[in-house]
Length: 234
Image (cartoon, rainbow, N blue to C red; front, top):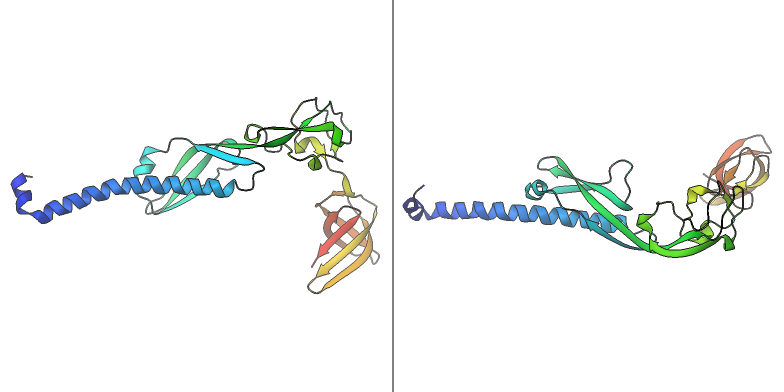
């Protein structure tokens, strides 16, 4: 195409410039939208973590930055969690469907529990058996305990050496309700609460489901609470 033709056709020049500007801004907007969507997702999903959270994001896919997209949907791959080194997926929903995966590292600065001495299987954890230490929780298993109240009174499942991070899966919670125990059955619904007695048909820790046989022989299920209480909601 000759320069003279473009000069004679200013509308053609304007169209070309607009097309070039649109191509440039489209890539910039896609990158900004992809980055901002990911940042917002990470901020929202890490709010409930136990400590001061910071995260870093790996390089974004260059093709994804340039590809037009009007709707992004971040997600965690199956089995993924926002803890330590992880991966976040981002789907483009329109105008065409595509997916990219971004490397993310989540750091959580806070306190966690260490064993103050060796713990043996079957031992009941006391306050003197644990101590706290500060560090990056994201570098530890997600099940690491952060508060002594989460450990004290529970039973050690297997032996744990001194100075080890204490995880929730290493401990067994005490039974709130035991099979054959007489329990207090609290039944509640809209505008009523009824107290009754019954026999527990299974063991259950705090918050687990317990089955109870009432004096009339009816079997009901409810949530086990400390002190031999089972709550049934209608």
